[in-house]
Structure formats: structure tokens, C-alpha cells
Image 1: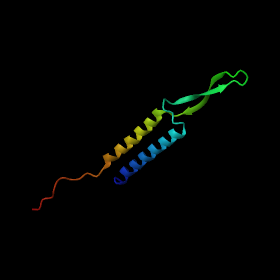
Image 2: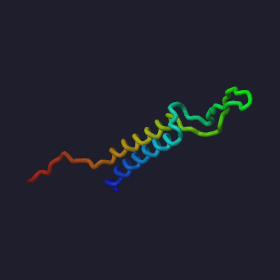
Image 3: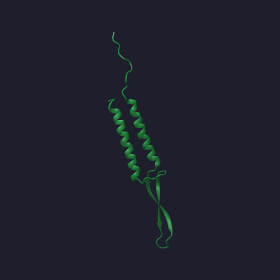
Image 4: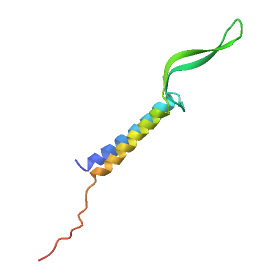
Length: 94
């Protein structure tokens, strides 16, 4: 079990990082804070005046990307705690 645990943690970290980057990119790749409402510029058909309406939609920001990347780095780092220890003592022949 000890041999497979580091490999499982590293694979989980890689999948988590890839999944978070893909989710962030497909969600709009917003390079600011996450938004629950997105501004949409519109123009009045009669007067031609431009105005802003807000659309209820979630757009993930950099804090989501950073949090997911941080969790992946943490899992990857934890995988090194389960490495096999090497003994430095040599057996003596008597």
C-alpha cells in the first residue's frame, strides 16, 4: 500500500490541476476575482443609448485557479511523506 499511495497522490494532484485549469479556461478565464453577475453592454434600439445590464452567471476568477493549484501542490508534496526510508546502518558479521 505504501508504494501505491505516493503514486495515487501524484496522479490525483495532476488530475486536479488539469481539471481546475480546464474549468477556469472554459468558464471564461477571468483574470480577476470570481463574479456572480456579469456586465453585458446593450444598446437601446430606439434612442441608440448604450447601457449596462447584469446577467446572473458565475465566472471563476484567479482565486479559484490559485486555490486549485495550491491544493494540487499540497497533494503532490504529501506524496513525498510516504517514501520508503533507506537504512544507513550496515550489518556486522561476527
